[in-house]
Image (cartoon, rainbow, N blue to C red; front, side, top):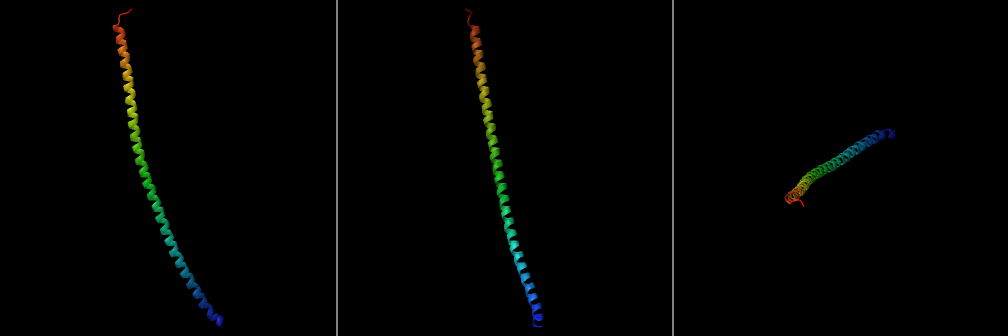
Length: 100
């Protein structure tokens, strides 16, 4: 008879212990989830920052490359102009000299 009286008490304690463990597990899970989300957000922000820096660097490199290309074109055109002027000068000089 005593067993029958103790059984509901043991069952109630077990249910109460399970409820406390479940509450503790849920609290730990919530803490883990918050920490995970905070890490993910930090990673995302770092990626955005790196992306912005890379975009800025790429834009600066593009500007530099355009300037180098422009300088190269101008140097090429100046060289071509000098060659054309030298050829014209030689042509005029040859024209002025009497034939031998």
